[in-house]
Image (tube, rainbow, N blue to C red):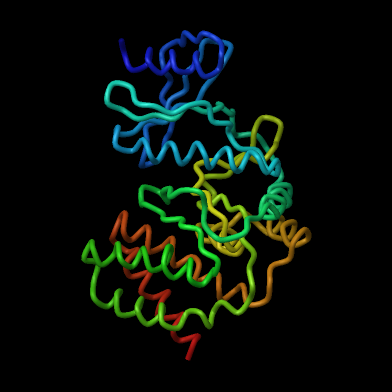
Length: 291
């Protein structure tokens, strides 16, 4: 039995209706996964595939999409099933036709509503991935401890393991010793998409905002807003609408650089190159701000 037939049979079992698709249609899946659309002419499913060893990544994404959907704040693709077929892991989810013309102000309002969903501590029910990098999410009562150990500290450990340079490590160690000074506000554990940049936000045919490819956890909402600004931003209407619902605390402009350091370090760990120098410059700037 072919991999596609195995996946089709799983879709039929999970959806409660037999599914016999036409030939799969290849879609853009980014630099990590292969993506296809499976359709029988009436029902359409989005399928991502990777090595069998990455099944845990898809299982975490499945639960993350469920968590985001349960908030009923902003649309996400509803997951259907995960599995392994012919040596490949896969996740199947609702296919949403993107490319519609939508309002970023609505997206800002809905993201603020998502962040209103909160937990008792920082973290999540399981580890997941940020890009292709492991992301630990052990529940932690204190946000500074969580970020020190499971975000910035973890990425610095990865950088050391990959041999990305002693200067990077020296700067990182200094920042880890002093960065609690930057956390001069008292965040609540908000539900975060976790990897929200322009490539993970679209609009459906009705203009509704849609977010996808999450790295879900409960954390400081400022970490999410910071990342939305990292690769070009979503425009003034988005941020004005967000702040109209739930204004950011003073001091965010400095914390933004600190939060985005996590993602730049992750890119350095995944891709190397200029991201290493960018991470070093960010740390130098933060340390200079601390005096």
